Image (cartoon, rainbow, N blue to C red; front, side, top):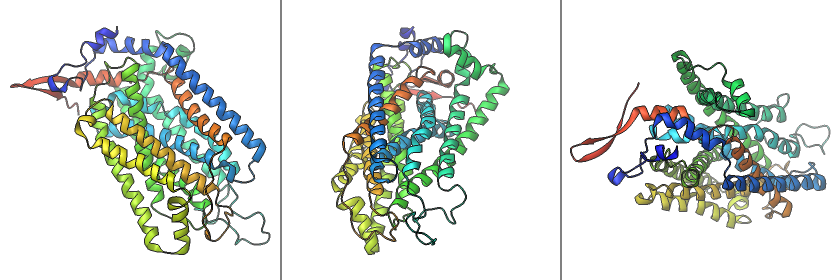
Length: 475
């Protein structure tokens, strides 16, 4: 079955392997076979992810029993790894939505890869709860009879339920919206597979797609629904990220107030999410048997966007740094020293290296950008940079000492991870990997209906002595 797909995958002169054109009649059975199979390499990846997740659970329970939730300090690295996982998995479903808006044909192989991260959004709700428990209250519990001893937060007048109720509702709403996008996108594929699937998959497919028969009206409704949900998810994601980075970073450091940090966090989330998707696609293409569906075009096209996001993140970092540097207030200088240039200087420099210098150097090189391995390599560097950014930011924010001070009067010492923090960090990565690997065995990693649609709109054509990709415009 695979050979019937692969024989059309390349061989177009100097564009060899750039675009691939599988036979549409063979796509569904071939992708289903890959989805339902369990090769040894996949089992090994599942095993490693499970072991890492177990280490994380062990580290979490030892941290909870030994330190409790009375002080936020011991949970700084837990906040860092949660933020990193949320940064990647929260923004990933938006990639499919954004490229659908632009009607890009090259995005078809990556749509389901990005949408499957929505399932991790549900897990993020439960991983978020310990942070709520560790967060200090807005009013200083050691001061009685006054309303003046409060932390500086974004909650004006402290509405009922703030901050816990509203924070958790943000993550619940984000998870529901992303799951709705995944469900609506996967309905045609589940409806096609329900006749051949067995066991739990068949029950799942019947329950989620029993109403789908592929009528023109249903396709129109699906298209409109994906557009509306995508637009709403974009707005909701920006809002939730603003709430999170403000609540769990800036408000934890006395007098840290900055309008640049939230958009910088969002830009880095877009950069890291696209990077992770490119890495997953490279693994699928190189070792997963999906070379007949994933050409070089998705990597080539996405690399340009990744380069733009890399430059945009660097601009926001400069804007943040230069504002505090020119301000020259003592508290601003202390914050700048604390987060950037003194106790965490090595981490900050490594963050700059991997978030900007390495991806920029790789992505401006045309031969590497046009390859299938270059953009994922740059994306891997960007992920390392995002990881270091979150570790540095949240470890510093959670360990400032007295969170109720009016301003940061001194530069606290750096707090480095202990063995249980390392277990928690590995566990966060393991849980995310485990959930994604299991999700890829419930739903196919390739959006079958979108790839089929792409075969109808694309072909290679010749003009004089040149060979070109011909794209249809259905709308």
